[in-house]
Length: 259
Image (cartoon, rainbow, N blue to C red):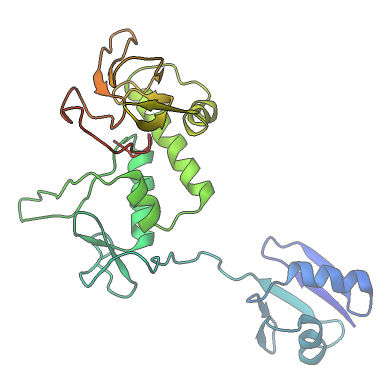
């Protein structure tokens, strides 16, 4: 049997079902979920594709191919808290809503879209947009990088892309020449460990103000950035400004926490 497949880009491909090469081409171009438009009937591809075409269509048919929409709705991970409130962005109650650390509800897809919208607008921090009152005052709670990637259910590639975009935005704000972002992030992620007051910590950190890379070569945890015009003083372990942690902190947060 011979078919002519017309794809969405108007390209045509003729295949013979009895030929091994034709069957291979068919399997390649017709994934499950694809709709086949025909003047007499429409059929959705599922199961055994070769048997389906052999029984449904006739020799010489021209078939219009409409691919399945692969835009998937992000689903909330099972181990994360949910909320019964409507999504603060889409106002939807159909999908499961995440209960963010600040207590407000948002769907994973809305969180992902909102995060990217803020980064595209040059932001370096992602804050809760929940409207509190008629004066349009918002929650404005800062969401950490860890919380965003978990609740938006991002994969490794998406996490890396967000890190790159955040880092680039921060460098632009501080008017620094933007280096190779992948190299800079790699320096932080692949940093060897050091020990400061019996606490394990990365040897390299980025200044929380100007984001230049700093290595701890000795001394206490209090650091003063020597980048021209910066002079920011912070705790090398918890990255808090000055002595706000009283240098009693025991935790070492990830560098990219959108802080």
